[in-house]
Image (cartoon, rainbow, N blue to C red; front, side, top):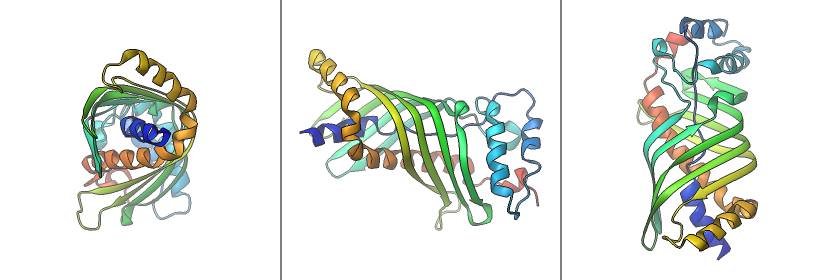
Length: 242
């Protein structure tokens, strides 16, 4: 029963975890200056990029039009789907914030091979949206989740079969705490749902081994689409000329 409950919660809360940012400065030309000292094909390149991204956090909320980089804080997704044996999950109108306060702790890249891997720490990340599940019936509602002291590692690779697509893998490294609220879990049984809400938030660590792979899979699915749209055909020579 406990495993089933946590699996169901995992399906709903899942996509709740990730994004990228680039933001608030009025002078977009200064964005390029932050990366101007990062020389490709040098041993210092990765650490230089890590430091430059962290310095560029003021741009996360505005994006950088000159470099065709959209804003990512908050980040929005109209719809993300996951289909597995026995269930279907759809998250709609997803909003995530917290990237501007995040810190890149490790960064490795091979732009020519289409490979980027970075680790990131979020003191707080907030997500919200709507959900629809189909598992023995259809359930709809809204959800929100707050992650505290959250760390993740994201690996991005260019697709070998589609030059305009990237594949994303996500690994959750650490979560200090988590608050999640999901409406209509029991289809309108408000009193029992309130008790279940308290139970979920007080015992989430017990069920996290079951939730973790679901969250990682859904986040990876979402970001494969997001990054394909943004960076699938991105010309890195614009930002990092030879």
